[in-house]
Image (tube, rainbow, N blue to C red):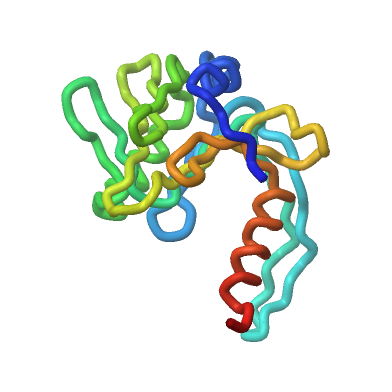
Length: 186
């Protein structure tokens, strides 16, 4: 079960992110925005992979910063007085804008507390704002060091409208429990 966080917990946990620079910014599947902060270090690898189509994916080492943000959809990058680009921008504009975030220094990490939507402000006046445009919960995750007490990666996210600190092990267990409830005979 994820640990529910207060606004004070959130501020305490995210304070070390202030002053970090975006070391890598990229678009994931669909319109997902992914940002890494700090020095990129190896976090895993994959051997060469031969797909059923015969295509070969080369061996690869995966890297990440000590801090990472993932916003799967509904996000925008704001300038001082306007929206610069976002998850609904044309592909070319989005790609250029995301690449332009590399090097930006975090000046503040905040939330809209009524509905916990993540906002990362940068020293240059830009800000990344996550939001929910549909009647769902905000979808974002802020991965941070150090690993949880059990050694698993941990992240801050929104669960049932509340801030939560979750580990990979907890997320897998919760997903399995939801699947079991849906497939259980009535």
